[in-house]
Amino acid sequence: MSRSSPHPIQLQSMGPQDALVPLSPPPAIQNPSSNPWASQCGPPPWSLSCLLALQHILVLASLLCASHLLLLQSLPPGELSYSPAQLLASSLFSCGVSTTLQIWIGSRLPLVQAPSLQFLDPALVLTSQKLPLATQTPGNCEHRARARASLVLRLCGGPGCHGLGLWNTSLREVSGAVVVSGLLQGTLGLLGVPGHLFSHCGPLVLAPSLVVAGFSAHREVALFCSTHWGLALLLILLMVVCSQHLGSCQLPPCPWRPASNSSPHTPIPVFRLLSVLTPVACVWIISALLGLRIIPPELSTSPEAPWVWLPHPAEWDWPLLTPRALAAGISMALAASTSSLGCYALCGQLLQLPSPPPHACSRGLSLEGLGSVLAGLLGSPMGTASSFPNVGTVSLIQAGSRRVVHLVGLLCMGLGLSPRLAQLLTTIPLPVLGGMLGVTQAVVLSTGFSSFHLADIDSGRNVFIVGFSIFMALLLPRWLREAPVLLTTGWSPLDVLLRSLLTEPIFLAGLLGFLLENTIPGTRLERGLGQGLPSPFAAQEAQLPQKFREKAAKEYELPFPIQNLRPYIPQPLRCLCPLPEDPGNQEGGPSEPGETADLLPGFGEQCPKSRRELGSQ
Image (cartoon, rainbow, N blue to C red):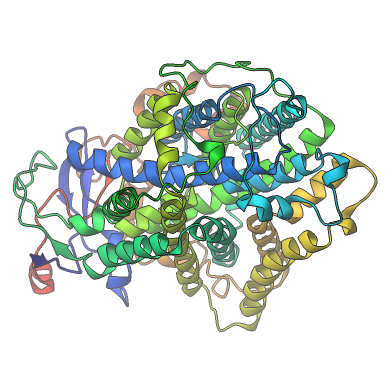
């Protein structure tokens, strides 16, 4: 095995033939090894793309099982009128549709849409108010639902069961809240509100949000890992070894041709690229050999699950719209929008693209809202939003590709059409899901910390904003969970709204950071906005040549077929699809936007073996 160069040449595909042309290298950065994902190359081969897509499906499964398991265990005992596998299938189908739309005409970033945990807290608040009076005790709110996660929730199947109507009513009300959140998110996106707000979010707003996002899943991770700490620690150890210790090791050249003009024998860092799939497969096999079947009964396989099933609205019943569902939906929309904007910034930073322009942010959130509406109409209790763990996977394996995410969307839709196949994801042991979620969330946390260097972190103003935003975003939810009586106003919808919003750490971090950043006086250079550059990561983008920035900005433009329809789009919505600023590239030929869609380091051209060879080019 050989070690790859830590300074690969930057490549960018241009034109309809995916011809790879080396770009002029940007000015030297202080620590180039801290940005190993800077190399932008052509699409990976289809065989490797399928394996990378399977990794994202496994990470998505951790979110899917965590959200549905904790929600089902928060409900009173009763009987479902349909199989839990159909709930998972409807969520997977809506995630697949939302992911495909997001890649095609949304933000255009390789982001996987998943049942975000930002929908879980409002759903738990909403269902906690539906508990029978006998089970309601002081402090018995959404945090008690998490604490009861280790208990066995028995699904009654006999004729004497009680609670069926209460169970189904609770799920219908949560689905109604998901529909409301999608409608609100889509409306805000069509009005261009997210893009306008994002342009005022500097590193001191985004970085605390990313840090809190990394911490936000620690309860779920601890809950899943506690079912068997041995398997969880083994998985974490294998993921760390594959991605970090063996990350730069390459297998002998494989006869794979990643691009039309590249070398047919390109070595690949297989340990790093498959640093999720390989450990999960190993630990999964070990648990099977040891006879450890750590699967919750709520998500266990059911013989009633059909092999083929077409999700459609009102499959079981229409979502229930109530004032409390409206309040929970508003909270879901605000929290999911804050989380998704942070995902856009994080993904663009990892791929060393300019920060997303306003029109890309607004399009992305409007289509995420459409995905949530679809999920709610299909009966899913969870909406769709950009997944932080999947973005953490991109950073962990240092590879991002639209082709891979397209395959993820197709696989999700395929699994959504077969509840029996969707149940295969529930056979993954809980400690495996917990360890996988923990490592990817840790990567998001560390990326948030690394973003602080874009601003003057030695400034007293900035130190206060960062510390106050992070600490209060973690303190308030804990405080309100310990003393929920403080928010008892006497009107149930207002209680749901306040409890939902004030128990969302990412929303609180984003809100506090935004208010403090834009109200406390400070220079643009101190705030990390550069000299006259409006983008959040302008200080980082200023180091790149103008030619690179112009071509990279085309990544956020819509495909040509959609741009040709722009004259027929109503005038108020044309802000979502502006005309390209430079229809032709500087080489003299028209460049189709989005052709750098597939970003994967190490493919498309043989990388030099040393930095001296790079300098000689």
